[in-house]
Image 1 (cartoon, helix red, strand yellow):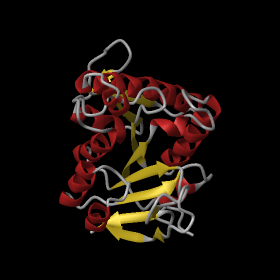
Image 2: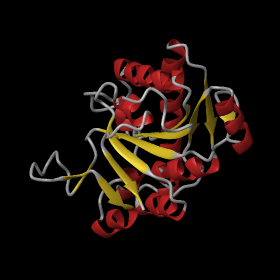
Image 3: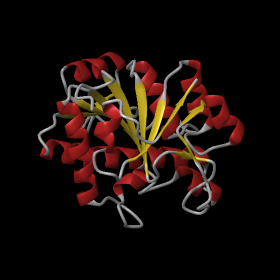
Length: 239
């Protein structure tokens, strides 16, 4: 069993729903605390950790747009929801003794630093966890795309996508018990089969830059550590 990390720098993509736990809305402090403990574990291994978090537990821009709200306005509101999640995660991480910085794509200096690529890399090199909030700062782009973009910018070696299921399946295993899991799958297969790993823009960006994506169950204790150590966990998307 490996004891040294397989990756020097990772980007962890969390959905806003990851912070809800069993609730239907908002942030569950116990779940956030557990995620923070797991992140602290990999940080202590010497893995430089950046995080992109969604906002779906508070507000979904796409859903609001479908109900008649202006899409750009709805997306900006969604970005603000990701900032709330980022601050909650920062608080939980600092309770675990992990120094954390929140960097936002939309400037709000009273609560977080503005995103500056070199500053973000410097924080990582100093051993701080960096949480990227407010997506890309642009409407019409998801936090999946923001995760792929930030991963390229900081030269992360892998995207770890924490979900509720243990990998990529032929269909949603929650509703299709007969669905089968892929141990390994290519970016093209994900796009061709329309699998819900990340949206097409994010997958294309990762494919162009040959950045692997590991999809794993965040709720299983120790999975994040196992993924960082290079053990087989979940599914891997690569060339």
